[in-house]
Image 1 (cartoon, helix red, strand yellow):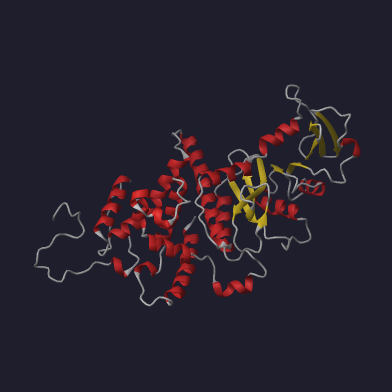
Image 2: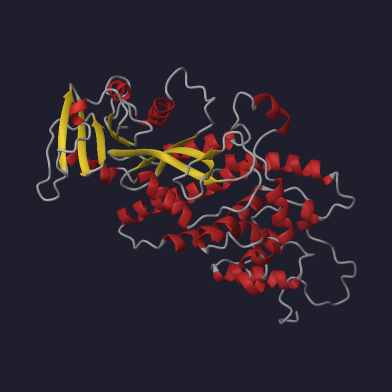
Length: 442
């Protein structure tokens, strides 16, 4: 997540805070405007909840020292974290009503496109790509909320993703906005494949898809300019292009394969069970070969080895997720963006470490170190606040010392008048220093 994304969040969040402050009789510091350092620290808190699997805890439990230690309370107070999560906005509220009729995704469209541009720029895809869907669990009000019964969450926001089959890196993604999506007259599946693969057009890569995307006209078009891509995907049994001879027959033996050719396309009919048929369509396998040991066609084995890119990525998101309960779908998508950023950055780190011959740390340890780097500038700023309680300052110093960082940094700018130095009214009277620990008695 770049500074440009953070600046967009700070801009519109401060606009929402200004509106909400009018409802308070007395403004407190927990209702003050935010900054880029504080938003980065808030993201760092969410990253730590994902690493420690604390995202299911309430804020009362999260900021209780007895349950969760001093990491969270050192970054910000519970009231401040709750207020920021309620006020987080990603677009202009005034213009939203005008643009939402054309694009329902407009409340978070801007930072979403900025993140997708970063994902495409920082990675060169491999030979095999996978396109599939991910469901962000959400049960609140949303015009394009989907119901997918075979998913664990069943209800949520559907994202169509393109991932690298080898590394599981998420290259690009698009939200599914319902049946009213403007596809220019193309079928939905065909439009998603062409838009997601825009960054790899003309590269002769292979794309593995499932039967929601696969169609014979699509495979023929992608072989031509400017696409120059091959496709391997399952085909639904109700397609009229499938010959009757390749459909299920009681006399046909189990584990048998039949091939049909139409120019550059290969259609495979495989029978794994007496009552089940699998149809695969390929534009890159010209020879219908069968493995004598497994009795499976090589096309089936190739599809099985490359189809799990998005499914594995979705599983990685669910294992360490920062998702929290919310009744606003833009926040649900924002949590999904943080999960995407953490996984993609870890994949890039693993690649760089392997190239340099360094030992690779676990993903959990990586996210804990990522949290430390995200919150470090904000912890130093909090130390400059002279009204901060002494026990909180001790906690901040303890966290910074654990990270191997000094607590004070004169080069770091402050972001609020509260953090400016305060003159002592009676300089001649000796007092105990309010910056040092009380144990030193300076």
